[in-house]
Amino acid sequence: MLIQASPGQDKPFRNLSFETGIDFVSCNPPDEKDYIRADIVRYSYYNESASYVMALFYKNYYGLKYENRFLKNKLGVVSGIRYTRTDASIGKDTYWSSKTDYFYVLSGQQGTTTEFMRVKNITQIAHYLGIPLEFRFYPYEERKVQLYYKIGFDFNFLVGNHTNVVFRERAMNQYEEEISDIIEDPWKFYATAGLAVGLKIGDAGKPGINIEACIPSGIMRSNSSSFVSPAVGAGIQLNIRFPL
Amino acid sequence: MKNIYILLLFCFVITACDSSEYDLEKSVYVPDDEYASLPAYTEWGYNTFGAFYERKLFIYSVTEVPAKVIYTNNVARFILKGSLNSSSGYYDSYPTYFSYGPVMSLSFDIPDFHPETYEDLIDLNNKTYDLSVPGLNVTAVIDADTIDLDIFNGQLQFKKAQHLLVDKNPVNVILSGYFGFQALVNGSPVSFSHGRFDVCIDEYDFARY
Image (cartoon, rainbow over all chains, first blue to last red; front, side, top):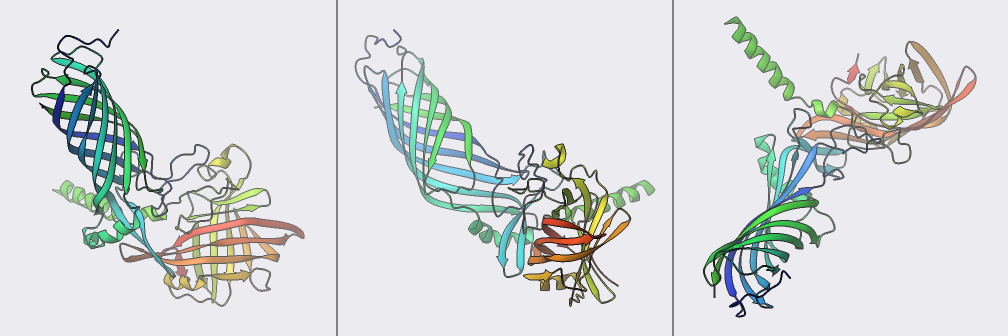
């Protein structure tokens, strides 16, 4: 009953839109990294985490998309090109931990010499070019503010990356490259799937905007090891729409 | 004005404390996969050790410096100090959080070893000592009671000795290894089994006099 075509909606809408968005994704604690020295007691009884080091992941993106409507404008298929920047970081959780705001990274082992570096934060920044593919469902009749639902995917390929390290001692900044070589490589490829609910604002056939609340529900990646392990997250996307 | 000086002195002390490597002196307990009440064998300088003394648990404690090396009268001694706890019960899963047993230390003589400073401990890398060799004394002290151990089988292995540098500066020497032996105490055989240690020795944990 919800899917009802209204008069004048038979002609398929087509539009071009510029998009931008950001997703925040929580990560599992990076407990088992063989280059980070644990810094608290690890109680087996509670199976507590090994360290008070925590991981964060977020990505923001910009893109250009084309939407074509089908099924009497009830289904929109959207695709285009997207640039994504991901920021994955590991740092000390000073809220729960001791006063120290740094952790120890095993920077080298040679013969009978072992080296640690004191690091406050490591951020791995990666740049991707990708293809979004979205299916928008418009169950309600066309109106100025229209609710819709979306299933979205994107397929992303690494085009560049770099690592920022905040050392406890500024004099250690010259060793940033060493830390970059120690941590896991960024994903060469990753794909995401997610659900969203959106608001299409503006009359059909006129410029308007779409605002979407997104729930990334899965990340598939090429690398078996990963600098951070994303779990669940949420995001928001804004589209500026121009009719064709 | 006097209060300001006191405040400045307090700030100085706080800053001085913060710059120490106190984090490296703390013990980090990573449970062994097989014997969960023992720390896993590690080589990170986690300042832990543990062994079964018969059916009790000889393990580091939060109140004692876990290891020292003392050189005196031309003899070097490697000393582990912790507590002697029951090895069964509720506390097994976090055995060192509550040090409820008596203080215990285990001292190993290291033959033909004459370190001048703690940095010389690196010479122990990959050294194994047969504890049944006559003249290689191993002594246990439980509270104030000294127990001479007449060892007839066992060994002390320094599997790895490492200089530890932090931010390119030497900080301590990490000694990691295993120990285990059987001995006669008052004519009865006793055993220390599955012993392992991963300890940091810095200038304050090494004494030569």
